[in-house]
Length: 443
Image 1 (cartoon, helix red, strand yellow):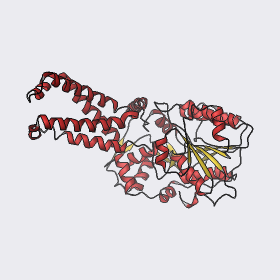
Image 2 (spheres, rainbow, N blue to C red; image 1 turned 90 degrees about the horizontal axis):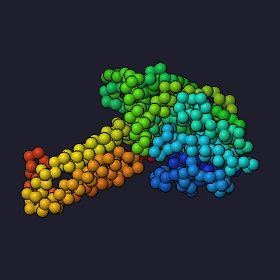
Image 3 (spheres, rainbow, N blue to C red; image 1 turned 180 degrees about the vertical axis):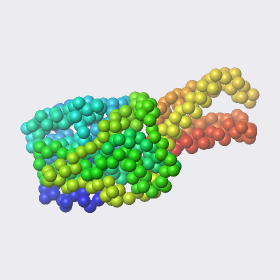
Image 4 (cartoon, rainbow, N blue to C red; image 1 turned 60 degrees about the vertical axis):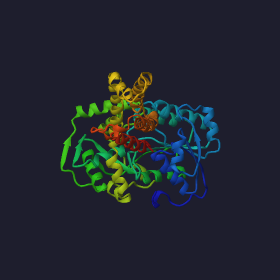
């Protein structure tokens, strides 16, 4: 966070509870609150993500979408302010929009009824109960539930949030801008406004400390709007990537195919920023009233040039942007490789067994090795497609490959000298699995 995230410590330190405290927005808000002398308890459902955040705060680990009203009363009993930075883009294996955006705020409001605890809701610019996406509709209904409750409330609605850390749509923006030689031209009529994460954190701080009064519902955004192709060009310039030699238009039917595939991966637990909700949000435009925040007592947000000037790109940003597209390619490559390996082996059991029996291994053991290995290969090739199990699948691929090499070296050491190099070709597979394993952290 830069020095403008706060205005000095509040005269009275406050006890805050931040929902989604290890997320992109939640972590930045938490750091701003700590820097201004407040204490924070973070709420999230992943102990591992909380640990990796490095935030020096207390944590409550549970699923906010299923917590009861009585449970919230216990969690919030000592709080002065609750900040809701939790959210999800689309329903999937790990996310349920109604539970996160509607049920949780409604139960929290019930738990806070009759108290003086302030609620700061991080919503989104453009929310509406008649919106084209479930994301906006559920957000709007959650906002309405809070508005109807008897709680001191501030609702902040940011546009596209840019930060030194990239996640989801902002990660995809960087990846698209960093493609070698080409720049995709996608949704050219879309208009997008952006806000720096520090400016959003400052608006939250002003809401927490009372400079923005209860009852305020404000867009939080920079003043300038950009079409998506221009935003990609400016992001490319910010990254320091050489200018593109070619611009490739992406037709709507191609974009539709991509979103359908991305939606399918969502059922397997992958939170692709190319899912239909994200694309529809871009298609509708991301706009807000840049004057609302300063009129209510907050600080005006910076424009895009100032945002990029505030967070200059470094080597790691370019590495990340160029490598971002590599993860799905690596997952698909490993899946196809292991599925093919298992299916081919099972389709040619006699030929595969002969490689083993020719070395003096018994018929029964050879059958067990070929059939068992083929089934294990197929299982690993399928399991890696499911996000919750992908790490275990990568580890399994490495261990099974090492097992194949070890057993094969003992039984048929001459295969290392085979002109086609079947053993040598296993080594790149091990390396790809290890690299993929390193990329699987999403926060």
